[in-house]
Length: 321
Image 1 (cartoon, rainbow, N blue to C red):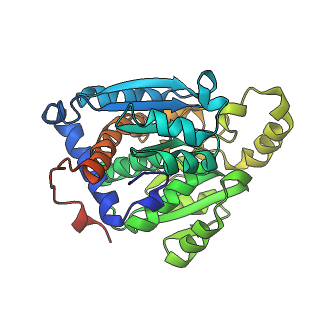
Image 2 (spheres, rainbow, N blue to C red):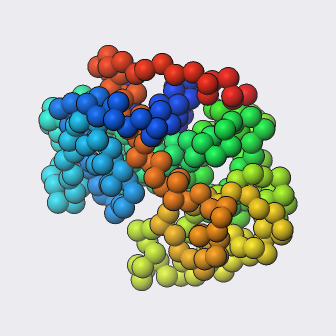
């Protein structure tokens, strides 16, 4: 059974194929209106969501399928070992998208599921976000060759997925990440990243920006903790430490890279409000592409596991290193 729990699960050709397909579906959505006819997607949520919920539900519906949304805490997943619930729910759907707190729970879900499981976000990885990020970079630049991205912020699940994708595609990635979110740290991934030559840690945001066509930031505080009183001390510590690394005009130092953010945005914290709506912002394009590339991902996994045929497209493979 093929799952997508992190981008490490995809070969370079598989990753390129999904991005290629996402671009094709975005251009010609009507051609795929029945591609998932009568296919059911279970959307299992333990964490809140706007983009993941809307994009997956809209995506499967536009492919001719249907979505069933289930709240982890309002279901028996919260009171029974995962293996038993996984065996049952996977008999009632064709794909499961799970947005859970712990990566270990996703591994357990995938182990016992009879259908593909997609990681819709966990403490360690956010592969669907990275798929949309990389699709957006390719759409904007027309290539992955000679592209450099700066990621500035907390080293978290989003950073991990971007790292894995950039290694696979041969894209240069500069990490300006003075704070590490401990549950997200992946020692093996970072060792591979540094050895690949495609990923570099940089201390100065201004220096990284001067070398990049794209600059990407993310929230400094995990979204589920942003308004929680018990997290206040850690929140204040992060805000104080990260303040010099805010994405703003001063830190851009006269450069004008494309601006990326995976949302939700906290203006005045990780990013200056003016940059969100600037001419170089591709934030909303990036967010929209979640739906298109996830449509491609659904088709890819169903093709791998059920023999559905993905159309063959050329162009992207020759544009990467």
